Length: 257
Image (cartoon, rainbow, N blue to C red):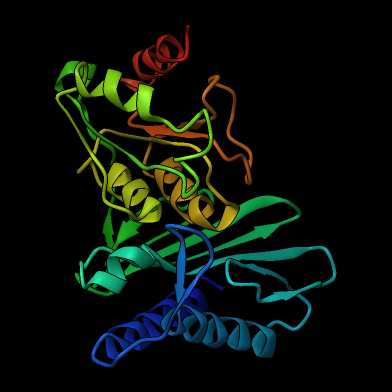
């Protein structure tokens, strides 16, 4: 199934690259949340291929593609993570596919069409990028860590919008980045390019594949309280493990009145 998922991610990525050369239709899902015809075309390609190859598998996809399945296997699909970047021509976006078996993550694939990087992991089998083994960084102090975050689409109206946490950590970490693709942020933690990523307001298709890739690269993934992260939990902290406690501590302090 991993080979199938890798091939599928490559195919969807090629579709997205080709679609960037054409004028795209855009539909607003909210004030700052959009979906393009490329999102929908990528999802249709992925969902169609899975339903043909594995008709018994359940599917949950960001733009509404779904199949009930028999309850054993479930795919979580983000056909274009980083739609706003993609729409503006910023080459930071990805295709993310994860497969669960009886609720447990079994494989994750994240493909970056712009850089030609394919991140993949199988449960218990390690994580790789284009075939090269991945390992999280060895940074042990928060003040020497390069970390990343993101913000929910409804940040203007929700009280827990991550701004206080961002402002606090911007002064305590070496620096903070925001790429606009949570799936790639998690892969960069796995690759040691980032030392940690935290975010809230996320959906299962945003994080499932990347979370497995971080774990298989030797990293730690929890919720904001430090509990083991379950698939679907909207608050995530992923790190190299060495700065995890310090990051959780700062997040807790940022939320105090």
